[in-house]
Image (tube, rainbow, N blue to C red):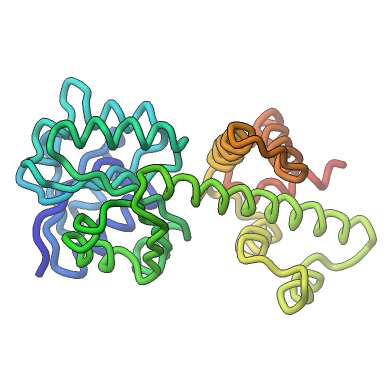
Length: 290
């Protein structure tokens, strides 16, 4: 049986991780601004925490699963922040998709407090977070990785050790998500074209899935879109944000992408069309109008 883990942010991915840890015998303390998310976790054996500090109290590690860098900073260092409640040597898993420079700053601030940062963005969606098959892109010191290997391997059967430098997990995630955005936009455009050519989109997707045009995100999202299912598992705004961050990182490195800006613009257009809170499968709706 594992020890006690705090989780702040138990939405789609954080909630899945909480359930996974409980299944494997860990004690879990959860905090979220959305009360229903906490209630759902409590039903599966987690303990409710009113503040990030309470979620961190007595925990050997804290998982931060909020949306962006500003929220992550507030969770850790705000008035009711978790960092002050963690014991020296405790680990903090930084799971949101944020700019590498933000990970570097937060990791340095944690180190000043005697805490170990694990740069650990995740990928795969809520179902994979729940069953432990999501990907974790981990960057941290060797000693920290070994000390928390049990936790990391409980969370994920696909732990990718991408380096020891804080920020390299974030860099890897941005590269992955830029490609995810490109692939999703391409799949939506291709199926919209199939329909315009008079083809059955479902049958066309059957062909694509067994041929050279296949991508995991294209299959996953387009199956839902063709069924008219736009209930949000991953809001349009998430890949809008992530592709923007990836392009900013690219420009900072002196690299000028060609396809990435087109994908990012597709997400911008979907948001402008009123689809911000829908699942990103809604890109099909956008391309159908072209």
